[in-house]
Amino acid sequence: MRTGTRFGIDVGKARVGVARSDPLGLMAVPVVTLPRESAIDELVLLATEYEPIEFVCGLPLSLDGSDTASTRDAREFAVRLAEVTGVVVRLVDERLTTVAAQHALHDASHSTKSGRAMIDQVAATILLESALNVERAGNTLGETVGEA
Image 1: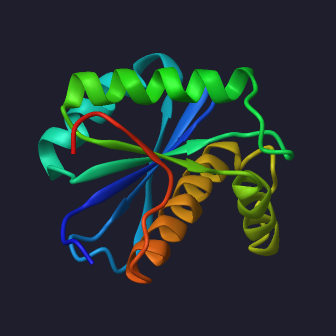
Image 2: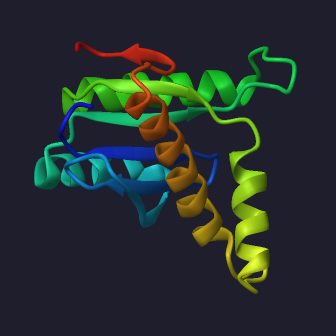
C-alpha cells in the first residue's frame, strides 16, 4: 500500500463532494461539499495544503457501463483538475455510490432535502474507501488522468 493522502471527489452538476484519507490510506473521512463553479479552485488549495498523491474521482457510468453526459462531464473535470494541480486523478466507477450514501444518511435519520451537501461528501467517502480497499488488496482501480 502506497503512503500518502488521497482525496475522493464526487462530481455533480451543482456540487462536488470531497473526502480525504489519512496519510497511511487506512480510512476516509468527509471533508466538504463545494459549489461546482468554484470546486477546482478550492481543490487546488486543498492540494497545496495536503499534498495528495492522487485524487480519486467518481466516474458516473450508466448501469450498463456505457458513457453518459455526466460521464463526459466527470472526465473533463478530472482532466482540468490534473492540469491545474499536477496531481494524478484516478477515475473510478461510481455506480450506486450516491444511492448508498442516501441510504446511509437515511439510516442515520438525515433527511434527503437537508442532507444533500452531506450526501455528496458521503458519496465521495464511499468512493474513496472502495479505492483504498482495492489498493490494500494489491490491485489498482480505474483509469488515470495526469502523470503518475
